[in-house]
Length: 630
Image 1 (cartoon, one colour):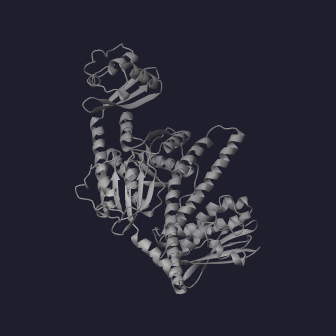
Image 2: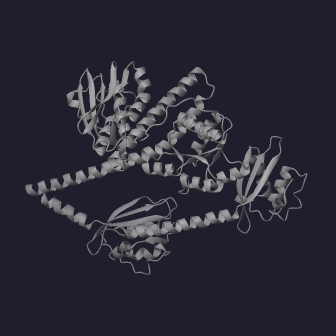
């Protein structure tokens, strides 16, 4: 069967595409249409052979160009009874719009490049692969004494040859012709570095570099003052007083460099750790799907060890992110009044099993005290202290409790562990320091107490430590009383129970990372759900329209392609389909994003995902909706 819209695509061969012809004959007739532009200049036979080859797969989806700048999206789907469904969709408007948007983006980028060039001190010339001038700045015009008629887009490199002749702009001894000869090479230019002296006495560091597409950049950096400074410093070394002054300058420069390096390190660690969370998330999802697969004893052991290793990686990345955020001052505090017992209940829930594994008694003394602090960071402080206490205690107990003072609450974490020597008690709060490495686990990187110290400093909570080798350690954190009566702030999630059934639940995953999409699909299938995988809003809408069903729950990644984000996508979906159950998945742990998601009624889960938590959340959402409908 075919419809009239299908026939209209190729009017010159419509009479040949009729009931009873084979699939190969349909391919040959359509490929012979004068309206089709076959890719790679393939012949009809070559095109038919390629189509038949890909036809063997379960589904086929590709874009085909027609004459007059028209475009089709062709989809093939094999049916269970051996038939084939072919859909031909006119996507001309969409394709043209994308092309226009790319042109706009390139135009904006060109303007940004031009503005950037004008705000730097170096003179810059940029030529394309055909040795035609593309961009320049006024600094280059001034340095090369260029006539304004040369400063035009498209001007050929040959017109600049005279500027690099000895004695014109630069002295003969500095050999300026080397720069022009380098630029005249058509490809495979090595990086050029040289120094030129202008006839007016100015000195320039010149650097030339070729790009991947054959274009190249030549920059001129004025180092006249720097060279003169070097000369002056050399002369100053003749006297002791001048040497002292020079040394002072060096120390100041080193201090500034160290501060810049530290800030750069924090930014780098934050960016690197954030980027690593995405593949770690994918790996955790794949491991979770493996855990639901029938494996032999040896394979189960290997999967278990891999899972624990990734838990360690996740813990280390989380600590690095905390350190970098605290060091860079990018933490947004949310200080409020809340009941301290909320955090204590969670601590007991989180660490009871790890204490029991080591044969330790973990005691968390309940309290009715209310404090004024950031509940998230205070909880992180106490988590690190309790984790550290359990790690370095081999027998006895770990105690968490409070003592009231006139103006504050003292929270104590006390253990009967190995203790810390006096000479190391100041060092334990430094990152990557471990007082007794033999007692630490593989995942212990010496970051826990460093995070505690930085967070306490940020919150202005007093922190102190007392310890005796062989007897144990006590760490105190002083927190102000709440300013008002008890105003509970929910900082924890409910304890996990048995996950509710997700059998046959229609769950759409919108994620631009192919590895994460694949992993999410596998995990959802192990839970008995029916996953629908999409890479964008357009893809999601197309699948919803094809199914003629609205999924039960949407799992949406925050960072999508083309600078789009998941919250905007959810808003667009809700505007078209009404209220939807949505969960936003992201590695962004900022408070701003959390508040924005909460304001839109969107559930938020951070990558790497806690698989059991996600399963319970989805089960709870579906159960709540079912109860409401009943």
